[in-house]
Image (cartoon, helix red, strand yellow):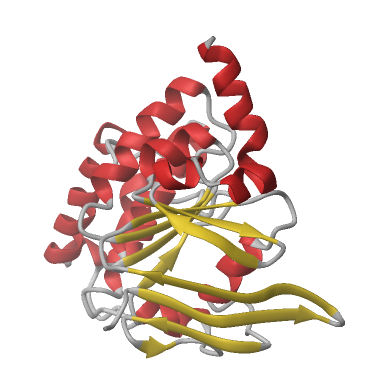
Length: 256
């Protein structure tokens, strides 16, 4: 069986320090996976390995059945995987529309050879408009990205991430720094724009985790100690001890 994304005994050392210690994970196409764990557990390192920023010390990473470990980030992206970062990564001096149009060019086959004026690329313009409506920034079409609110910039980055046509999307703490109301709206947006796609997100807000994920992967000391539905993970004694204990205890106390 070919998974959308699979990690096989993945390991990463920095010098003598082993950060990822034999991580295994198999994600089906279309699943939404939240990766959680205490600080220093290796979540960001795992994302960096999957997206090609780091090469693994050993083990395998497969995207739709094809090995991608030791490939460059741009090669992995062209094979169908896109990633957003903790720090918003947009073109600040381009408009909302121009940001999205840049994102769709490669997927439409234009690559970097601009033999036509961009304004004449009807398919690129129409696709950029589509994504702009999806992320609900069509009313900010001509506004420079640097002048958007923080939440709007994050929404634009999500749009850029999905506009390249990738089927596997990695979001690194997408709701970090948002208010509660912004977070609620953003969860709905993420659900909407990733329909039919495979989603992995690193997230610390447990409300976001339980509201968004089909399954949760719990990473502790560089290992995936649990991978199951939110309900099963919530009741897993090992997970409660390692990470969720304080959250579960707080919830139980609030219920009395």
